Structures are given as structure tokens and as C-alpha cells.
Amino acid sequence: MNLMLRKYLVGAVLTWVCSAALAAVVYAIVISPQNRLRNQLTRQIAQKQELYEDAVTATLSVERAQLEDELQRLSERFNRFAIDVADLADLTFDISRIATEQKLSSFTITDKGDWKNSSIGGCDNVLINHIDVSFTGSFTQFAVFLNEMERHKPVVFVDKFSITRQPDGSAGHAVSLNLAVLVTEPKNV
Image 1 (cartoon, rainbow, N blue to C red):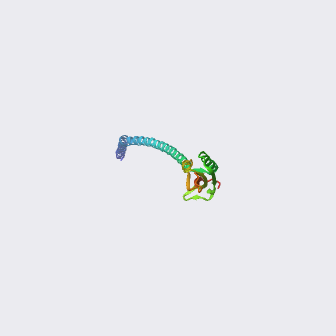
Image 2 (cartoon, rainbow, N blue to C red; image 1 turned 90 degrees about the vertical axis):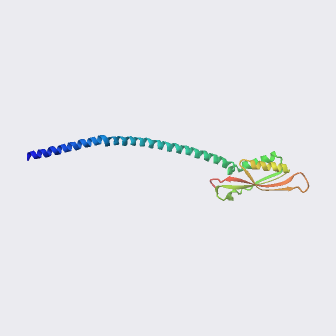
């Protein structure tokens, strides 16, 4: 029996050695290159992921800069049309200065100060202030004054106006204007 056991053990050992050798050859030929390829692909993926994250960061920075530029441009455009409440007195002086330059007589200006109760539909922070202006002057003076009001920065809208010929036949006409100005709502009102 000893001989048979020896033959069996030798056969088993040879089978295991051949199987191990075959497994080592298969590992060397098939699996090892696959592991190297997998490691190489993992490194490439990590590099691409880093490039992607850098690109996203750069894109966000560029987009943020573009949005800030757009916001600045829109803010400047808005400021051409609206005035801060604190600057309403300066606007009254500007209108008076224009009237003086045009040599309008009997010039009066009244700021109604009604911006507190004059909301605009769909606008949360913009109100309307009305200013009444009256003077006596020729039609040319009226036209020049009206043109100056509409070209003013911020824009002064002419809501209503009337021009009446003087009953005594003098050269001047009585002019009455209702001007509207967009006002940004103060934060503490």
C-alpha cells in the first residue's frame, strides 16, 4: 500500500504543481497585463477628472465674471432711468437750471413728493414721483425745454403738458407740464 500511496501522492503533487504552473502562466499572460491596463486607465481617469474639475472651476469663474459684468451693465442702464430718493432735490435744481438757461419767465416748480404711494405694477423697488412745472415762454423755448427734459439723465418723462396762448396777444405762452420720474424705493420706507 505504501507504493500506491506514494504513486497517488506523486500524481497529486504533480497535478498541483502543473496546475500552479498553468495558473502562473495564465496570470502572467492574461491577468497581469489586464491589471497594468486597469491601473493605467485608473490613472488616466484621475487625470481626466482633475482636468474636468479644473475646467468646471474655470467655467464657473468665467460665468461669474460674465454675470457680474452683465449685472453692472444692467445697473448702469437702470440708473439712466431711475433716480435715488436722496437725489430728488438735485433733480429739481437741474430742472430749474435748464429753465434759467432757456430764459423762461414766471418759472415755478413743485415736487409733489407722492412717490411714497405710487407703486408700479410688477416693480417692487421702483416708484413714480410727479413734478409740476409751469412757465411762460415762446413755443421754441417750450420745445427746447421739453427736449432737454427727455434727454436728461436720469430720464424725466413728460406725463402731461398744456400750452395756452396768452389772451393779451403777447409773445409768451403759458405752459404747464406734469413730469414723471422713476424713483428707487428707499430701504427704510
